[in-house]
Length: 265
Image (cartoon, rainbow, N blue to C red; front, side, top):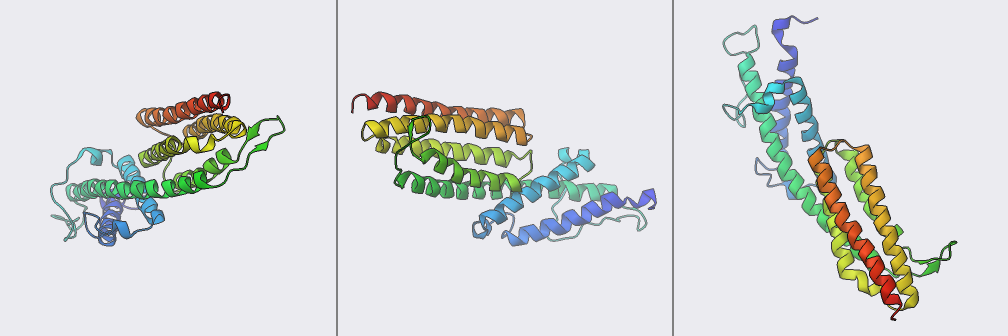
């Protein structure tokens, strides 16, 4: 219903890009993101997700934007979208504002992602510290195996973090893969520092051996679920697999260590 020379899609995209980018810059304290530490984790996630969605949408609609370096910045001025002809959109100027916004917001994305990962590291460490410091009673399963609730507690709380992140980010998000690798790394560090506290006598060693083995199996299930539910690049999948394999190897090795130690207690 619109004349082709009106370039409605380009005009609308350029206007939205300019308005939204300037609003974001104001709210995060300028291009350097000085106010990012004041945002909540949820707000950081929403910002990262919005930029990823914006970038994917713009580059799908205007593929050339991905490889263009903007000729100027638009922090303090509005783009002249009708320069030279009041009746037709100036495609060069419109493309330039889209390229500038795309590149500028990707830097905002990097800053927000770094702040989010820093915050995630602290939160996951706090959660794991609480779980590992709790009193874990030993009990016997229907298969006559001694276990505690360590495995269930660790993966229940860590799973909440992973689900929250996954629900807010896109299925292709590299930030999601990086967050999961960070969580795996924190889990590995906590296991290394706390393993021996569970090895007190024969019963606790047997329970720990079973717990650690179940934790290694749970890790593999978590990774497979992430890969099935998301659309990661090959590089992201490799990064996730390497991180998960390191954790699985640790848990499996600790299970063997605990079983052997039980025979000498």
